[in-house]
Image (cartoon, rainbow, N blue to C red; front, top):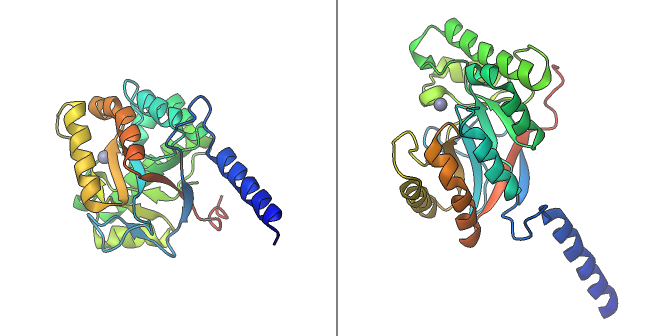
Length: 257
Ligand SMILES: [Zn+2]
């Protein structure tokens, strides 16, 4: 290859990269570094806080997840922060809150986030009979699907589920696996169920992320302190050299709908 050709290839590659990274109104955005497909064949359960393995992330890669929403006073702020940095996250929706705030759920979907499920009303599912627990899971999925896609079905378009309070058991995990639904735990969390200032939460989550170096991060988009600290969090992880990975369903999913 001539030197000139090599230079031209290098410039073209750089331009493609720059275009891919472009974020309207924010040339210095954190952005979404890459997307990985997740399915039950390769990773039925992920998150080392609960399970033996997690997503195949490289060093300094984070997957951002938000539970329990949508919530009118906080989720729009979370979406604003993600949008201004062109970061794609995953939301684990509570069917009850989606039914009350369908427009916010639809906004999150339209902005490219993955829409996972988190039951209808957040009970601890491991403490009830299997059939009752599955009915609660399905009620949540159906509420989310009708609001997001206009179809009341229990085969979710994005087959990702997180158990409320991480309260699962072997029969429930096995059912989810049989249904092709990936169960998400987490690798690190902000403990944002504990009241603290946004600054305290920021310091805590950064400390925990630095200890771990990569992983699935759990927040709650229903928490004001999380919504408030998120812009600073996204700036800080960029400064520290972290990148964000977006998780999406595997390609072969979707034949059932
Ligand atoms: Zn929850």
